[in-house]
Image (cartoon, rainbow, N blue to C red; front, side, top):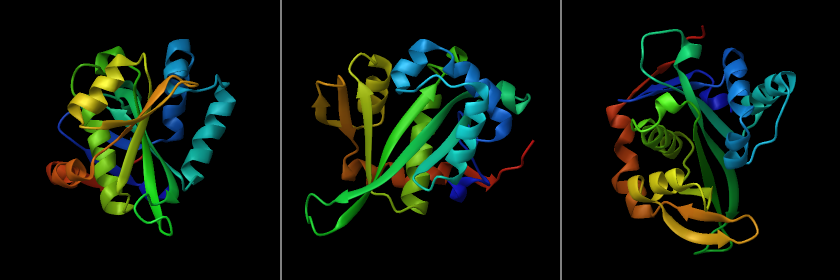
Length: 202
């Protein structure tokens, strides 16, 4: 998405930056892992295809992507621990079918083991939701998680406050949604404790 191509968000535990060509090689290395592909529902791509995918994501107005960095003092590529995405769509409102509602489906991947168990995933999701709420006026946030992905289910339900609203037996995945009262009481204030600045390309 072009809207975030120059946006850097710095939180307490991590930094979110736009997905750039300099990130592709490490991202591609992550996606060579079969288990990561299974959990993220991704296909195996060649490095060339990965570069093409990065470019298309930048142009796609329905996909918001940030690379997640740790806060160590080192080269940016070495700080990469994962990515966080928001897939944007519209659907009829459940309260008023004649009105469309903009929804965001959240995905988080902490691919580097060194980035897990440190609150990075929780903060990265909180930051992208808060940024989208403010800048894209998205008010409905969902997540689809396979039923054997216990860490992600725990993150979204116990830490972020999402609630189960559906289950697909075909895909063996839960659909979770963020309650409106939780969105307003917590996520509308997340950016107050973070720093938003212009991303400086390496």
